[in-house]
Amino acid sequence: MKMTSKSMAAVILVILFGGIAVTTALGWWATETTKEPARFSEGEAAGEYNPLDIRGSYTFGDISRLFEIPIEDLAQAFQVPQGVDPASFQVKNLEDQFAAYAGDLGTSSVRLFTAFYTGLPYDLTLEEVYLPDSAAAVLLAKAPLNEEQKAYLAAHTVITSEVSTPPAAETVAASTPAPAATETHTVEEGKVAGKTTFQDLLDWGVPKEVIEQIMGGMPPTTSTLVKDYCTLKGLSFSEIKLLLQAEVDKALKK
Image (cartoon, rainbow, N blue to C red):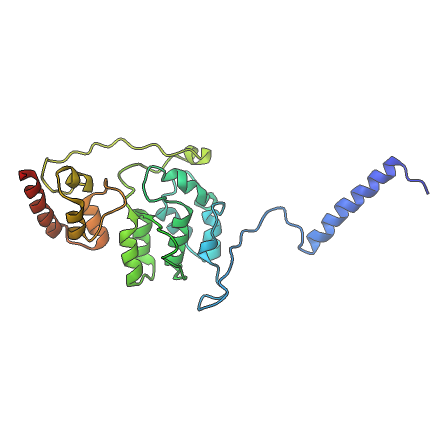
């Protein structure tokens, strides 16, 4: 039997839509991709999702669902801007949001946060990973951190409350860098106080090595307040202030 063009078109439509109907009924057809990271294959966490496989295309909604982390904690930790739905906020947006900071805050930060928050394994020797101070605060309040993790956190936290503010919802949607906030930084010359930054100490002539010896290290960015760093590392600012003031006085007399 010779088939006309109209008959051929009808047959093709039946095959096409009939196939979709069958595969949909069997659960083989999906119009959306299902995000599911790799699982640990061995150890105590065998069968659990591996935070290292979190991708930039994941949303906080995906992470909350997969790793059972409250969406509110994720939003607070990574400063999701007001007016933006945290569930639809993509991890890759963090690179633009925190572009003004040192430490490469982005997808790796979310992986580390997720591992620390859930108590899942994470090899800290793979790469240097930094977290915004807001994420560190959430972890210190709610995560089952051991001493090694607390020490790592203290050395890899970036103070994000001074350089810039979270971008507006339209900025995130457009994936453009967050504008830096204008803030006046005024300190009394040579006097260590609450507004003193690490850069102030360096400008006053205190050697970096001396600061590291007193503080037990240096933050990733020298614009960090000495007081904030003391709080993060559990140091007494009043005691540290006296030690630093002595070094400042010594440096300014030279």
